[in-house]
Image (cartoon, rainbow, N blue to C red; front, side):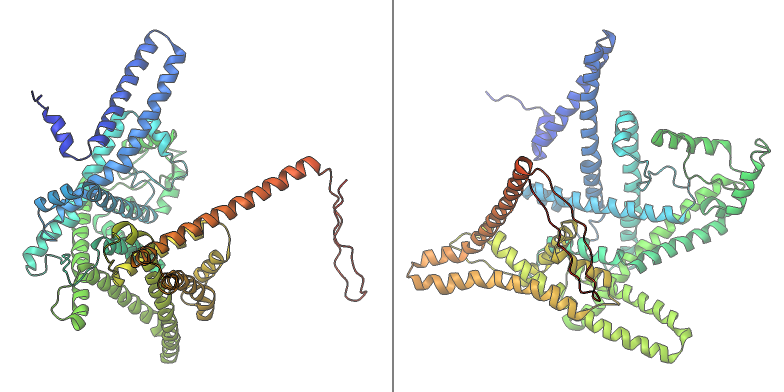
Length: 596
């Protein structure tokens, strides 16, 4: 007999993540059980059991909230971004369903990654807004730079319904922004420019490049390289400030958005004398109370960093017009960002590719850099114009030399090193795991280079976070010099040449052993193939084992010296050190240590 399966169980099995969903539901039921037991312990006055149950409930509560904040919320944002951008790539929900059924883990991870990037850049933009706007305007958003902000303490103290309400509000806000800046611009672009969309992201047999590697390259290299530039951030901050000043004067909200220091000082002087004598233009007590209550919930205190403002007539109407003006501005900015870089990239790529279709990540990245360089060149020329023609020619000469040096460094550090690193990673990790011994692995240089860029970035980040050694010193020196004071000889001799030499030796020495030395031993063809395919991971394992053994030997030596000193060392005598005098020619006694 076949037992009927409930509808909810069939839905859970269809999600391909029945284990994860079952675990989360189990933790929710455990939390509910702990709440009930905690209430019963409070009724019968079992204080010790009540305290233990409370601690267990807090641990389960914080764990579930962390999963929701870091796992579920970015995943929802990623899927909503994908659904709202289907028409941009000429895809349907059926395509997404097929991709999810073929690889559910990879699909969920990619959507989570895209949602995490979206949340990160949105939070970065909010931090930039806080630098421009008056303190207190964004009281409804958490300040991540506040030293008093403690997310774990907030998860512990606030009740579940507050977290649920905040989660729903965050989903509504982030989803509305996606609709405003992605779905609506796509509809407008399809109506005004019917031939512009969809973006070409389909890969053909003659272009064996991984789409995932290109997306990671764009998200991890192109966007951070643009946003980490000080000029780009200053430009964005200047645009936000200009928009805020314009909107403030048009709607008479300058004091609300940017604050008025003189009025604040006057109000601060008048408040002790006449606390209740406030006119209609001053800040109402209700607004102060809302902000004070919000800050008291988060920081267990009064309002911090709050500046009063002058409240104009018909204030709610002006705030509504401000929101409408902000939505229109965001819509126009989104239209420009979705069309201008791709237009510029397609136009530039058409000179050497003709009418062939190219992946839009290439065109978007190329157009983005061209737009950035154009704006940068215009701003530099405007700054140089008042200095005269001779100074301009001198500056152009200096910048031309600097650009030539930068191109040489970029070819070495961003071209050769990532290519060798990606090829070595392909030989050591990917090919032994993916390609059987009876098949021949195929290598795609462009894909290896794209992955090598990501590997190089990860290695550089780990090196900068690690202990002090020669590579970290050289990278810090290159970063400190910057582009303007770039030292070509230092970079080539101290960084590029050692890295390229090590990578070339890692690639060539195993190949020479497998293809030149092993055949001389008279082994069979199968053994030669086995050695050629497995020598790279074998040598990697040997190097790792040698590194672990050397580390352990150093640790045992330190332990041996520590034990010897603790057991046999009685005392040490410190002798003053005197510098040698050149005139007197006297020699000083070197420091001595005596052991008794």
